[in-house]
Length: 409
Image (cartoon, rainbow, N blue to C red):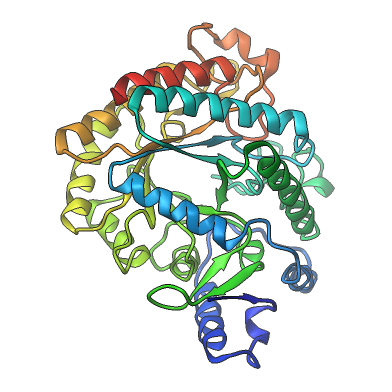
């Protein structure tokens, strides 16, 4: 049983009791401290835009999300593999059919390589149709301007006006995401699901259904099939974790070097209270030099809890470094080594290395070093186009798929 929650949480007091119960819990969750949120110049204007978005059409359907949940349960049981990838940060300017086609083409090619090697179904999830918000380490950039937080918040253009957070970008992000989702359905016929980081809570709280079909009433997001919590917003007492607890969508959680085994178990307890296989994906992003040391006790502790989570490796974010000529980059060999370490840990412990989560593009960019093409630091300026973090290009992505295919066999 699913009903649309059509109005802001603080105005649904005339709805049914389950709606009022969830509205109260939603208000309580969003009242908690929330990291990485923009400071809107006019908070009332931001609230007005958020109220407007509560009436927006959903981007995904509950039935699609349920199908993904079923497929992720297969991954958690060791019967399938999860491939998740796409742009670091989507932009309005690049939300074009050629760009989306190129990214989908590479995702599908990689999935074919992995499926052929493993003999298992590959669950395909794109970082697309909503990946418009980005967490940042600093609040200002090198010029003293407010940092770029993704097209849903401000512009990458380096002027004070462009960097000022603008809530009217949220409806633009929704419209762009809806258009991208239409193209995904047209080209992939339900074969690819969409995901983004659950970061900007003013946006995430808007398009919600009441989902009373599970063990307890929850909310189903109409903005994406799969949402993940980043390493910078995973505070156990924070708003992002509390909001994710209310959702029936499958949830991912990035776990970096600072996560202890005890914390990991607490995340699992909070985000998978009913022990649903595949409900939670734990995405390790340790860095290639740390994964073999830090991941085993986490896997052992979570496995001992009895929860069937999806174990996924993000080999990108723990391996980011500045190049000698001033570009943020990653080396292909470090990406490969972290994935290899991830597989080694799970093979040793008898658990399923369930997937990879990468930032890549179907375009011929020069953002990550190495690979068969031998991209060097001198090559980076030629086609460095990312809005935020460096992505694997077409050739590097396919090469990585063959590396992972060997690990799977």
